[in-house]
Length: 142
Image (tube, rainbow, N blue to C red; front, side, top):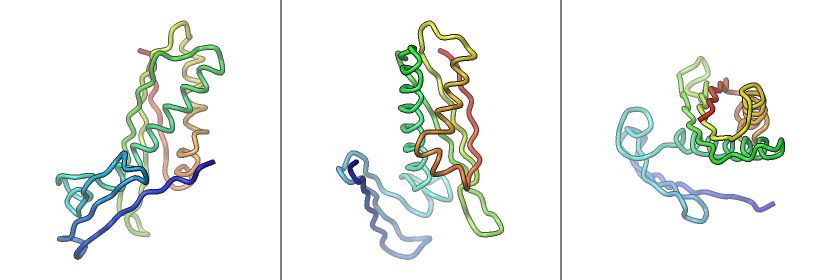
C-alpha cells in the first residue's frame, strides 16, 4: 500500500500566527489560524481535515459493504461533524457525528442500517478515532 502524506507550516505565535496545510499530492490545501480553529475565522483547521477524511473513508466503506451484499449504491453522501472539547487532559476530539444518505435501489431499511453500522465500526478512520472519540451515526435512505 502507498504511504500518504500531508504537510503543514506555521508562522508566528499561537493566537496571532497563521499557517498552511497541504496534502501530499496537492489535492487539498488551505490556510489555517487560531481563529479558524477555535473561533469562526476564515480558513480550515485540523478538525475539518479529520472530518473530511472520516466522511470519505466511511462513504467508501459503506459503498463497498452495500455492493458486497448485492446492493450497489447510486450514491452515498456523508457529513462528519468533529467536536473538540476541553477535557481534564486539555483539548481533544471527543465526539464525531456521521450523517449519511444513501441512494440504494432495492434495499430494505434493516439491511441498509446493518451495513451502515458495519461501515461505521470498520472503516479505517473510524477504527483509528474510536478509542478516543464517541462516534455516532444517522443513516437515511434517499
